Length: 203
Length: 203
DNA sequence: GATTATTGGATAGCTTCACTATCTAAATTA
DNA sequence: TAATTTAGATAGTGAAGCTATCCAATAATC
Image (cartoon, rainbow over all chains, first blue to last red; front, side, top):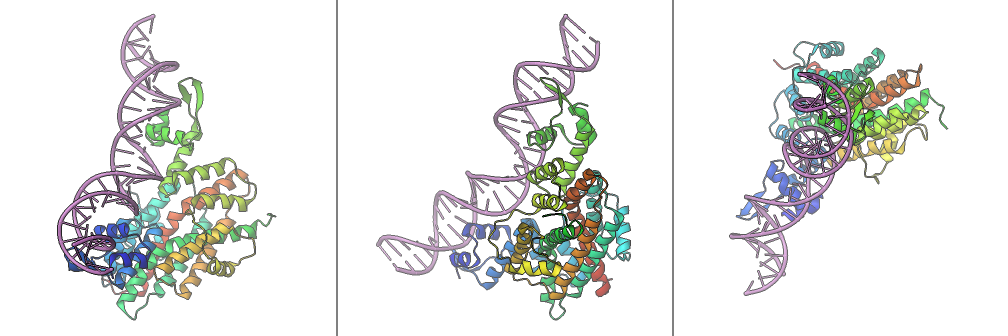
């Protein structure tokens, strides 16, 4: 199919597709001449993935990394996760003290070397941000956070399909990035229910 | 204290402080003459909150809403949450079908009217995004998501301090916004642990 | 009291990001 | 042959979040 059809099919404007091609998010089509190329279903699928990632809040640079990981996946699941996380996690100026983050890691079931230092740094940065705002998370709430994310992460990893590597890669990489907005939205919803439960005073 | 000291104290450049004043994030100081004003500790504290929110990924417009809520809080905790959520949640072009989101709401313990329609729409948008990418969350994983966010939300709401209204407001409004990066970071860390647990094949 | 530094306020500029528009020559289609 | 479409290059746009520059008026210092 040609550019115009690809655009119609995926619901993405032609100039935007050209932009994604330039940025290396979308692979070139098959050239049929000096000024013509053909695109296939894989381009449609990839465009859908790109749009989903972008509107999940992933930056174009992040999308490029995610797609690169999909195209050339590491063999170990842990490395796969690492790559997906690196693409999605906020960029980090380093040098943050990791002590508090390490404590939380231990409570999660830390085993030395089980987790990329960058993930620890992400946690440390989030804690630091809370600190600098003068906000403290009550111990019980922190315990619930750990409990909650453990439940979530265990199920996610248990759900990794093992039949074909392609499926596993897709699941891990996209699941990591695309589930974030869902989790945050579910949390907000759950908070409202919990609030009504505890403070049933509203009209 | 004067502008320069405020800047030094809070670690925020003078032009940025002026910008926040212009944008109405920071209240004006007490004028001592036509071209002078004094700032107090409340300005330092507020600056710290602003920076924390900004680097938690909240937009300046969102920060303005959060601070407005802190300054003039609704009386009902539910409304407080609503305001905080509205400030933080992604802006929504509406018109998304809410059916699937409603189903999840029921599984969370939905009671009619317990949740702002906008929160339902947030969930619906996230689901739609996943759909359009052709990504499906396995039922067991979705169940774990609901379980996890319920655990988290219950603890958060249980932790709302009831001694003074100011504290409650601060807790709800800032906790909502500032805990998001922490939760995502903890999830990533937990995923890596879970991956090592299930796939211990790495070196 | 004279001089130097600082401030509030206004306005304009910068950088990044994610697109969007325009142009050209070649190629396809009618 | 004439009209349309395309790849590729280059440039422009608009929002967001600062950052820089001026100015006249005030404060601080000598």
